[in-house]
Amino acid sequence: MRMTFLAALGLTALVMTPVMAAADTAGMADRIVNDPRVEALNPYGLRLPPAVRADKTVQFGKALRVPLKGHADFWRVGVTTPVLKPVRKGDQIVIAFWARAEETENGAPGKIGRVQLEATPVVRAIFEQPFEVSPTWKMYQLKGVADQDYAPRQLNAALHLDSAKQVLDVGPVFVLDYGQPAQ
Image 1 (cartoon, one colour):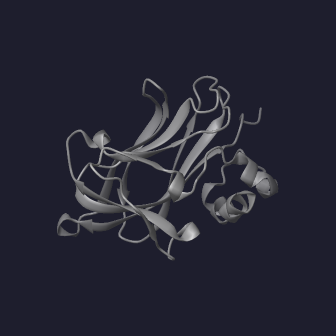
Image 2: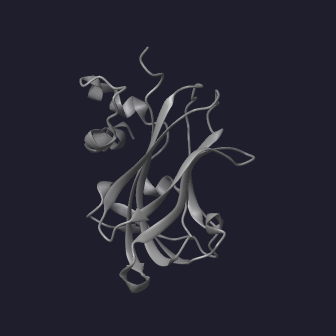
Image 3: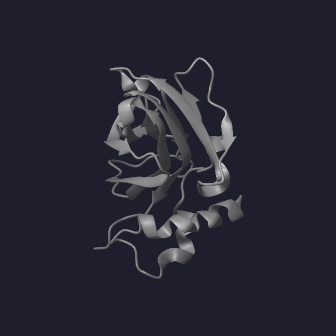
């Protein structure tokens, strides 16, 4: 498992923030607070969960293909990944995820209705953002700050997907904790 996380260091340049010192890449694997593998994602809202597919063109070589009908309640279909480590109030969190829109209506960009860091078990968004998704694999990211202390598994990163008639591919999802801002 440690080697898998070390392989994630390929995402370092995409999620570096001003809070990080340039020489901080040695601890990058320690910043990952979830299991980013596609097999560890928790799909919800579909009659049958999407199967994990081989795809050599995305990091770790696996993805979920999610066929969507589009719905005003876009949060009814999506994937979550639990945060497995404690998070402190004020910690700077980055959600970085791989996605592509495999099929869309009339060539429009794909849409993810909302990506959010959410408290559980009663779902409450800490920070969130919608995304347009390109037809080629791309890593997207969302940054925010924890509003209070959380124990392991009290937070999820959630991708609420059903905002358009489309087929989305979802690759690895990383949740990184950069800790407290420098004073």
